[in-house]
Length: 136
Image (cartoon, rainbow, N blue to C red; front, side):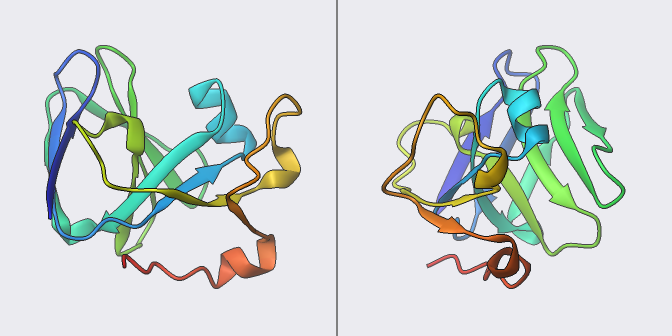
C-alpha cells in the first residue's frame, strides 16, 4: 500500500511504500507538549519511507529519540528512536483516507484529564517494552 503525506505548508513531503501499523495514541508529556493534545501515530519500517527533505528538521527530544518537523510551518511529522528499524508518522499528516484505526494508547498515566479514549486498548509500560511492531 502506498501512502503519501506532507506538512501544512508543503515544504516536506513523504511517501510510504509498505504496511502501516494501526494508530496508537501517545499521551506522554513530550507528545502533549509538541501537539497540544495526544499524538495519533502510525508506524512503518524505516526502509519503507522516502522523505523529500524540504526543510525537515530533527529535534533530539531525549537521549534515545528524536522528532521530525517542518522548519518552515512547524508541523510535527515523525518520531524515531535511535537505531530503530521503524519510524512513527503523525497520522494527521497523511494525505486523504488512511484506512487505519486507532486501536492502542500508551502513557495513559500522563494523559490529560479532559478526554477519554474508551475504545483504544491501553498498553502499559511493561507491555510497551515488548510492544510488537506488527503492521497487519
